[in-house]
Image (cartoon, rainbow, N blue to C red; front, top):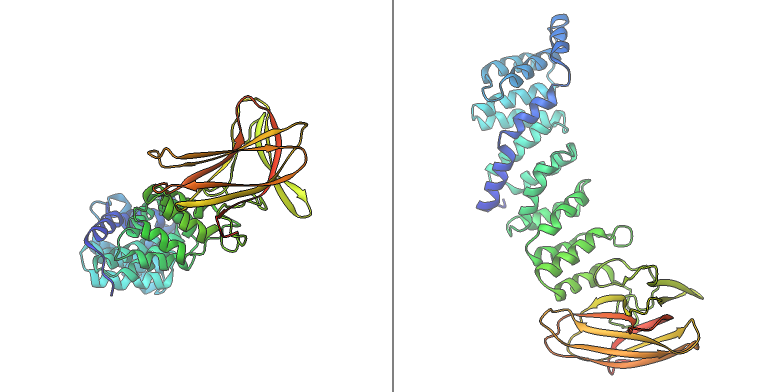
Length: 402
């Protein structure tokens, strides 16, 4: 049996039990009618199980800080005699024994309630707390899952506990294994938890084991990449990005992402970020024959970046190559700027390409120095010049590999 470490065990017990959460939820969940309706039901038909359960629930609700366990048990026993398969009666029996700290009998009746109705949140929360108190991770996670399937609102209480568990080396593997089964609440939980994870190793384990559909819903994958960039740096973030987004995409060997502009940028830091102003913009457009190009426009004569992406190029010499053409008369300038993203790094390299209306291919070399772990690769125009041009088939390859 896997055992919870001290810190996460304490957090889980306190969060699930204080202030006796399973009692308060049990009270609110059982009382679905007004007090007058309950009294009328008792007066008209006092012999059924449901009126007895309602009566016990009224007693519990009257003073949750001083619940008469013996009285509740007597009423619940009578209800079970009338209706042995009543989950609420079994739950109240469990509650009565839990109030007397009789864990064995409380467990028996809460488990009976769970068998009769898996949608009883009170039973799930007590059984969760009970598993945590016994250091039984597998059982605790099973009840986390059932509680979260039963009630959406309980996520506000349970999500922070599970998120903290991801950073606990004794528990994280089992939490990730639970997420692999894709429970209904998993996407909501991951959206909450990923920005809070402190260990890069946990995020990379998620990348390896969880099935992120980056084509239909890239948001969670982008959150992992962004969080890795925050806590571990561009190298780890790019490694995750390659596994999540670049499978089977860069067959050309280019070290740039989406250099042929064949797909809409995925919005992450390692794909194109396109400027979208009224007089200055970069737009992906069809070039015919199933190919695409990037249309770059600058009409304000201010110059600057129109499209950019982050890259992770190791120190060395690279060749930048592409095809470009102008969409207005005369020669224009396409500016390529590569610089270190490290705030302490001063290296940058600028390439100015003359572009005419007649399309032409070009290649230029850049040399990335040691210590420049990650770079920004930008396309734009110099100041004081209007531009209306396009670029396609853009690639960055290591010198000697092409």
